[in-house]
Image (tube, rainbow, N blue to C red; front, side, top):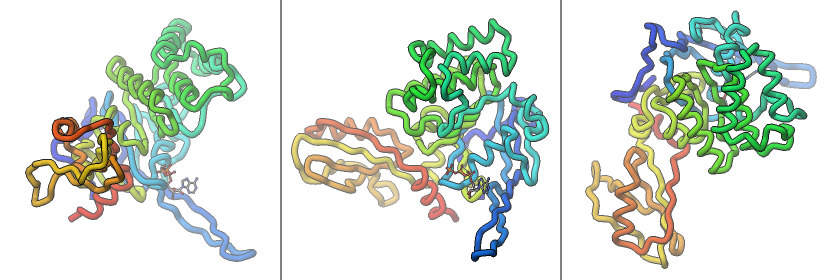
Length: 341
Ligand SMILES: Nc1ncnc2c1ncn2[C@@H]1O[C@H](COP(=O)(O)OP(=O)(O)OP(=O)(O)O)[C@@H](O)[C@H]1O
């Protein structure tokens, strides 16, 4: 079952085949499991199980799924770190596992949980090493570095050893490192994991600008649906190594009938908020799911805008503060299964 949302972009390439193309790609790991003191048995793990998709040049695509779904394995195959067990895979016409070095000049990779920077060196020295490794022409290197330093706010950090950077500072440093050689494709594995709100906003804005100005193709894995909402025109859901959905985020929310949560703080404790609203399919579109003193939690359809709801509450209740909580990816996917025909 691969669902495509109505009207969702489906990745037609600039050329007929797309810029990134996967046809029935598989990755099977052989693992040994101890079954006794001297005994072990071999087992196969199908991390990626026949995935096919196309991504056009300049698309920003979210690649999401629960833990162990096969996201990192796919990205590792796309960079050439892992060789597929079956199927066909091309990035910019290159077979990654056969021509890893040639591909390296055309792609950038950021793994949120690891750094590609030299731990004991100041950021600037890591960048100098990359300048030489990728043989980046001097002028282009300087232009790219200046741009990243400005937009990612790295000016004060260039002389600081990487080990002394905070997670958010290091992540910004890693993103700059991945872009110094002007890659056409950027793979980001959990780029906002563990970042504070300000760093998240900076990273997202930078990626938006990068895509708009340079047309960089971006494939992004994340557990944060806000990353997807703000950056991706298209989302693919993978589970147990299979592609379960390919389309827009709004379409995914519709398929999963997912709900967002509006948390409102009122001036004082009041009975559950009641809004005069039409029911949809006999189900009220907004429901109070919890009341704790002056705080109330209201669930509403995730595909709907929160703004009119907030306006209606503000007009009828003494509102002090509010926040919107996104549904988590695991919940959306679980509901997608439940609603499967
Ligand atoms: N080198 C390996 N050897 C054996 N099994 C592996 C290896 N790498 C990954 N796997 C298994 O393949 C499956 C997919 O793993 P993968 O890391 O691709 O998932 P993921 O979607 O990136 O998960 P997460 O969100 O937790 O990072 C898991 O069952 C994992 O245990």
